[in-house]
Amino acid sequence: MARTGRRPGNQDTREAILNAARQAFAERGFDGASIRHIATSAGVDPALVHHYFGAKDQLFLAAMDAPIDPGEILPQVFEPGLDGVGERLVRTFLSVWDSPAGTPVVALVRSAMQHDWSARMLREFLVSQILRRATRALNLDPAEAPTRAALVASQIIGLAMLRYVLKVEPLASMTPEQVVRNVAPTVQHYLADPLP
Image (cartoon, rainbow, N blue to C red; front, side):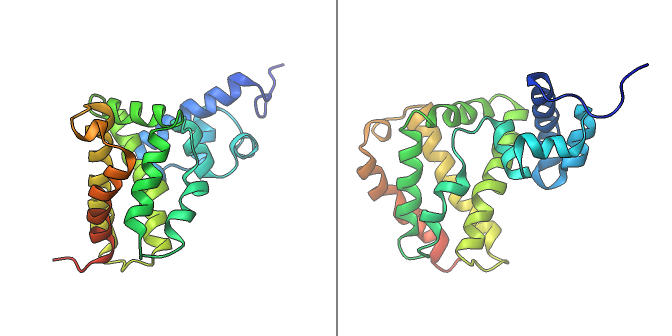
């Protein structure tokens, strides 16, 4: 008689969940993907997804193979408030990208230029893990938050692309302090100043 119920917990089960999650997040986005749908696609009970990964945020980070959890590093950027947030944000991103943990993130930015799936995953990562946290923590006006977040993302992704992927000089060889001095005021403007 065939066995029914959930799969036994093993590496194959974990990989099946991750594969289903990657597909779901790429097709439906972070908000549209559900643990139940992912579990069904992987052929497991939803409780097993929670057992392996916890909440949907952690499953998303695992599916992206994210080297860092934005929930651990971004509070120090946003909780002090709007004053100086541009500098803290740029400095934090540079510290991540310049560390070994930054290599997979830069690889995702590079891949997003060539593959739709990577572009969708990068967009979902930015929106669900970084920009929403910023708009909530900084208490941005909900009517302006999407515009402000998109403008900040343009600076951050543009910085990653030019400094780490295309290696455009002199930006590629600037010290982190030089980058902060040149880029942080624009990020600060996007987050704190009146929009035109």
